[in-house]
Structures are given as C-alpha cells and as structure tokens.
Length: 391
Ligand SMILES: [Zn+2]
Image (tube, rainbow, N blue to C red; front, side):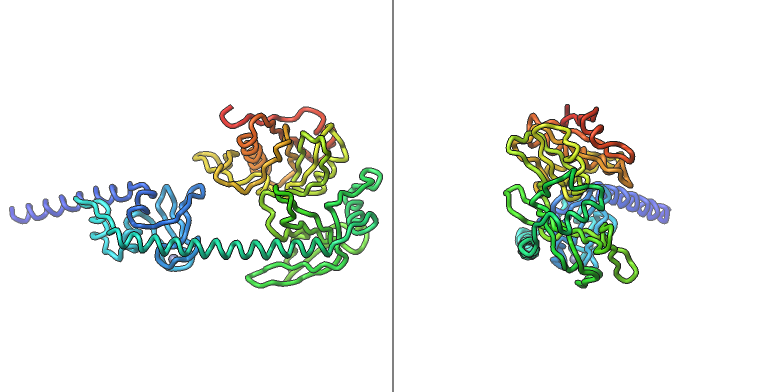
C-alpha cells in the first residue's frame, strides 16, 4: 500500500512536470526574451534577430517566433525550445529552468543583471552599426571613384553592347548620360572571404541614384571585347560568374535612364535593357524610365503570411526599399520572363503595394514582357492594376 502511494506521488509529480513543460513551451517568444533580459532583438518575418546574449556576436542570434528554435551563428548557444534557452541563458538545470519559467512564483532576473545584459546588447548593436556604416561609406566612395573614371561616348562600349542586345542606334539615337564606360575595368569580387580579380576588360557603368539625387552606387556590366560584344564570360575556378556587379549602396536607388521634366508616369524594369526597350516603345506621354537594379530593391521586404508561399504584402518597417518620387502618379513595373514567375510577381506586387501605401493616389500596374510578346503592345494594351492594400 505504501508502495502504491509512492507510485501515485511519482505519477502525480510527472504529470505536473508534463503540464509545466507544456506551459513553458507556450510562453510567447517576445515575453520569454524579455524575461531572460535578451535585448535589442528586431523582428524579421518569422524570427527575432539581434546581438547574441551570450557572446555579443552582432546580429548572430535568432529565435523563431513560432517554434522558439534558437541559434547563435558564432557561439554554442542553440536549442529547440523555451526551456533550453532559459537553461543556457541562466546556467540552470532543467528543473531549475522549469521552476524559473513557470514555478509557483515565476522568477525574473534581478534588475542589475537585466541592465548588464542590456548594456552588452547595446554595445554590440552600436559596433555593428559603426561597421556597417564604415563599409557603406567605403562602398559609396568606390562607386564614385569608378564613375569619375568612366567616360561618356556614343561610339564606345555602351553603344556596342546595346547593339548586341538589339537596341540599334536608330532606336536610341542619344544614349542616356547615366550610361558610361571604362575600357579596362577590373572585375573585383569577394569569393570565399577573399577579394579576387578574375577578369578585366571593357565595362558599361550605370549611375545608381539615391532618392536624394546623389550617386550612391554603380551598376557594372562587363562587355565581351570581341563581336558581337555581348556580356563578357567570366570564370573563376571553373565557375561561371555573373557579368554584372553593383558597387556601392544601391538600396532605394534607381538607374534614371530618362526623366522628362513633365513626367507623371514612372516605368520601371529590373534591368537596363528591359527598361530601355520599354522606353524605345514610347508607350506613354509624360513617362520616365528608370531601371530598378534588382527585384529585391523594387520589392523591399515582404511579410510572411501563414499558408502563403509568397504573400506579396510589404513589410512596412523596411524603410530603405525603392519608393517612386512624389511626382509619380502611376508606377508601372515590367515583369520579365523569369525562372520563378510566382515569386517575381509577388515581389512586384509587394513593391507596388508599398509605393501605394506611401503615396496615396498612386496607381500601380504590372505589365508582362514575356517571350514573343511585343513590349510596345503590352505597355499600350491591357495591363493589370494592383489594388491598394485593403482595397
Ligand atoms: Zn553567441
């Protein structure tokens, strides 16, 4: 009989632990990190990310908002749930952590310890900002130096390359001044943590202009010196590399190919060639033609929505993505034939919705430039209008 009582007590304590474990695992992640004194984390869709609370590693720590799986990319801090994080943060055993998280009197770290941890996190964040700013300034200075070395010229590399891409001089008699060239330009890229120069040669240089009007980056397209002067083939250790590179800080910027003084429509493709093709078709009066450099810049950050692979909805905390200038009353994104049309479309919708949210009254449209489709027909014909958020 005595044995039974012990067994009962054991079962009872086990089920109480099970209950507590379930309770601990139900603690919302923002509340958990707050109680553990993990500061300066910021949400990035599905995770909270920021300085590691143990090693101070900058932006190396991430915890999943749903599963509470956490990981530092620098130290050993990693695990699968709320209890594991409490154990490692507080140097506790499993029962101690459980007691801390959901004991009869749930504990909190004392104020001095919380403050100490906040200081470490703030310091890590400040250092990271400084490093990023230093890199940014260096990249922008590089971009300006490249631009200063580049030359305008209607008979040079730019003309040859555009002809190879089907843009003949009679279609585009005057080259946009934002397109220049360097005859002998080094292709410099960081591969495997090392800066290498696998190629040098003629290169088209495009000015990327920030919303402020300043040059903050250049877009570089290396051109094959032999006819028909298409993109240069660049290899490194047997791997074929992109013949285009951006140097500088491109986010929020654009390659402003053509901006008439009375513009009220902005037509934007991702690349220079697509956007020039649209410009040659001259589908609209009072339209500017800018290349968006890359889809990520046109789209900005997208929010994750449960059950949707690509939500197409903008993360409005992303303040660096491209926005059309205030004069634009219509924003037309050109959708290229792409390997992943669903993702491309979601990104373009995301960018348009962001723009419409920031610029009330703006109309957003997507036009498709698929294979065998005349861009002129597409641009002048029916195109889809994207409804504004919540419309
Ligand atoms: Zn760490």
